[in-house]
Length: 139
Image 1: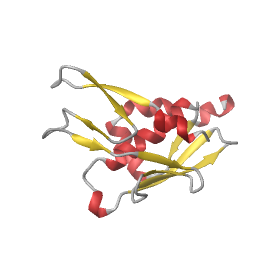
Image 2: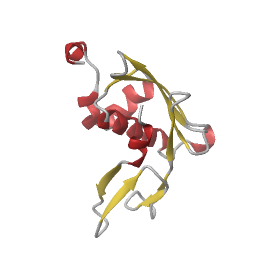
Image 3: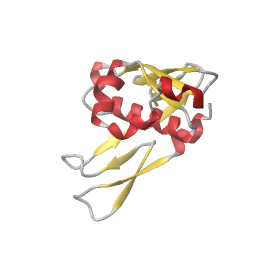
Image 4: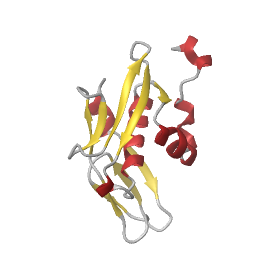
């Protein structure tokens, strides 16, 4: 599934409170402009064997199932332990999964309720990757 490509990709982020553009990597780094001095972005790794993207300590993860001969990623579950909630880990996991889908021309089915009910309404730019029956003839 080429997970290493997704992990090494970066997203440019401009923050209004900083003088420079920062690169948010899928590795440990600090992003300023997130409140009180910045927050650490966790390193997210791909675990192809278990079909998930996970934090390096394996405690938080997002699980997927590949469908339609590997052309559709069905995100089925997101888990963040209570000790790590409120840090934005679920969102970082989703961004990693969606970046992976985008870079590999995959459609996404958001079966997981966190993805469909929380992440996507707050991040509608990812809606273009969502699987649709209308698109089935194209994949």
